Length: 321
Length: 187
Image 1 (tube, chains in turn orange, red):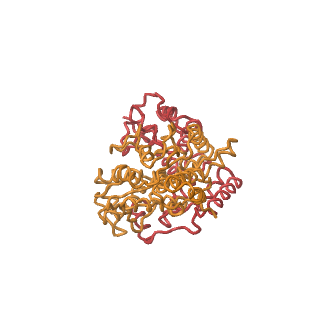
Image 2 (image 1 turned 135 degrees about the vertical axis):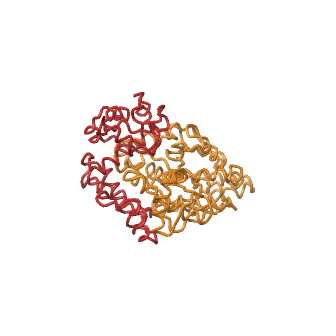
Image 3 (image 1 turned 60 degrees about the horizontal axis):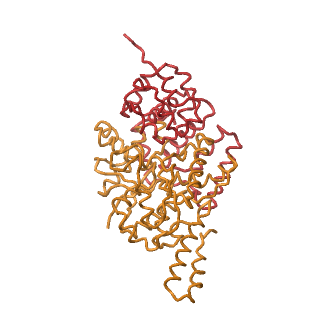
């Protein structure tokens, strides 16, 4: 059993609770234990770096110091949390003066960070540490026929961290989708920006960036966009209505976490994966799962009993209130 | 001997720890502007802003919306052939303009950043509804109402917490941050 110090991030307790639960569910299937960092705090997102970088490092250092006590490596499911924690960690390891100053501050909370932790993104843990073979083995109900746009976003790949993960032409997200039986469509905007917190600072700019991404996904004939970041998910899904209003478009494409798609392929109940809390219905994805289950059932049992099973499978619903 | 620091030196100094090669090594190739997904929404492109800094146009630079229109996607930093790290430059300018209170009025970014930092100081965790007033700055009450409608939509799906989450050791946490930097007057 692999164990990690898990840093959920603030959005896990609100807008991306579905990412959080699907991470734990799929992790359990793969024999990975995510041990939540005790009393973790916000990573600072971008506003802290806007005000002062030392403060931003201080916030991350507290989480790293608490994680260090467990002797486990840190994993963050959010691109921005990952970038901040990884960046602060690298700086603290490289700069003794900085570490001394930050440790003086950490003393106020009875903590000390000695630089003994590594920081990973969740998708890196799944694709590299756990491995695609193990994922494929667990994907007993592969998502055959589902066309997915793998959307990496920005801070997962940039800045380049020299850790072996390609930042200009990564393939691991597509490979993961293939491992669970889905088809990764050719999505040229996969490394483009979703607008991130520009949705606050410059709404029109952010909406235009989301529009470009949605257009590219639709042109690639994707059924669903898969993300590895709560802010990407929020901007691409929850602001679709706003994009349509602003630009007169009619986009209606589900945006799901890669862990939710993994979970469906593993036969985990949609509700347990947080499915049902979307603004844009994920029904096309669930229909694909249901069709697949129906076909399986039809192949397995006598032709006479098949229609009944197929019907039962069709009733898998998003579970919306 | 020169006794005052140029604006370009001041900004380059702010970027010291980022590993930039310095703004004066810019060759104006515009790779940053070409790769920037938000450049269309900036009054000056990143390339032009660097030229303006090097030309000492301090007032014009600080009045620009360019650095508050940066989404931190790091495309420019990844591709700049002179390793200037324009995305770090945008952060440096944001900080400079907040500390000197020299940003353009009616920008949401500075106010939002302050509210965010204050919220974390208080509770240790982010809470989205607390930032709503920032929207009044750019779009007036209409903008704020629109954001509230958006928030209600998410609340109906259980995706916005009704009460802010807090860390347990908030007192220690506050003392910790004030040991790094006293924020009075900034946030």
